Figure 1 (cartoon, rainbow, N blue to C red):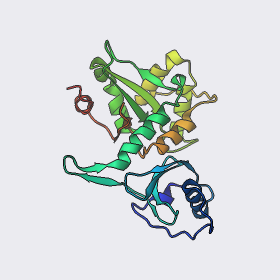
Figure 2 (cartoon, rainbow, N blue to C red):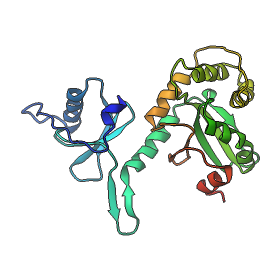
Figure 3 (cartoon, helix red, strand yellow):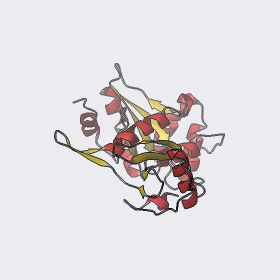
Length: 244
């Protein structure tokens, strides 16, 4: 599905659906079905660019369409501001999308490393037990906690469902809540975690990560919805969070 939107900017010609004048959202939805029957729009709203509409897909991706559903633009939409320069309007929408989607995750499905004392920031981390930089970040969680940063872990086994990383992470999430942090540390240290299975959230968290734009690990989501891919040392991360 993601290959469909791999190109940064595409224009797709779509034939008119009818001589009648149905609502704009119905026209755009019909055009999407002509492109791929699996596509559907969960939100269609006027975009900042006159005559265009921001379309949020069921895949979590965002694109733009004209009112006739004849032209689609995939990529980033920028507005030139005399005060701020180029403003990424697409990322602004994506931030809110990420927050909305993360808000749907049940607290019982999150592995939490709480801040020491006053919580000054929270970072959601999509992690993989087989990822070297994830392991490096994991070793720095005590530093982050000491600086007032709470770290929330969600699973993102890069090798996919049924992989070794998937199975290990499922075993961690299927353990008793008071054992998960310890088992995560064991796995990140390359130690064996006994296999167990349950109705785990690993697959849904993997799909959630893909929907919010995660392509590798670690991937950090800040409280304002900003997605930051890759590893940052604890002190640099604290600066990015404006704690220093």
